[in-house]
Amino acid sequence: MLAMQYSVRLPEDFDVEQVYQHVSMRSRLFEGRPGLRHKFYLYDAEDHIYAPFYIWENSQVAQDFLFDNLFSGVIETFGRPRVRSWQIVDFDYGSSSEEPTFLRSAIDKVPSQLPLGKAMEKEKQEHQDTLGKPGLFAHMVLLDPDRWEIGRFGLWRSREEAVPTSADCIHGFDVLKVNQDLQGAA
View 1 (cartoon, one colour):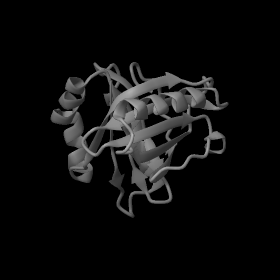
View 2 (cartoon, one colour; view 1 turned 180 degrees about the vertical axis):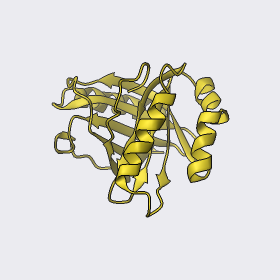
View 3 (cartoon, one colour; view 1 turned 120 degrees about the vertical axis):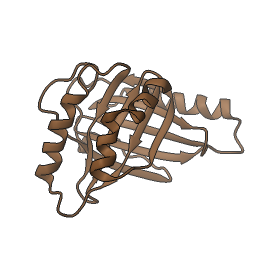
View 4 (cartoon, rainbow, N blue to C red; view 1 turned 120 degrees about the horizontal axis):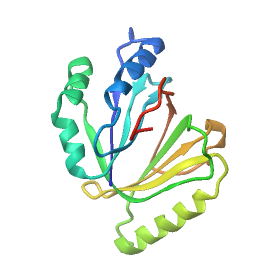
């Protein structure tokens, strides 16, 4: 599996209601999308950033998305964003079956003095420990081997339940509720 995210700083005149309208309109286009396991519509109100997060079955279906008309619509509306992608080292659902309302991402450099296998085992153990936390919908450990960064992304029932973490780069996003159920994407 492959995780992918792009971020768009929205124009000042693009208000919150327009964000919700955009999400409602765009979500329909992803219904039944082959190879898409999850899509979360993320928004940071403080910095006015729209940052959808995808989980794809493999890199080919992710690439297909980047080359098709659906992503061209993003480019036409917001310009061509930088797209981050990560290999998924571990992904599991937590104890909460309620829709998540908050995503916390924590990204760190992989320690160069620690063998990569040992670093990943440490991350997997921390991942397992996190799975037992109340309010957790899903948690994943991601690896960017280009930058040698490790990402820990948690989807939580609420911002208040998200477990505090430390990392070089921590970011929080509201997960926008989609107005209709999607097949193959959350």
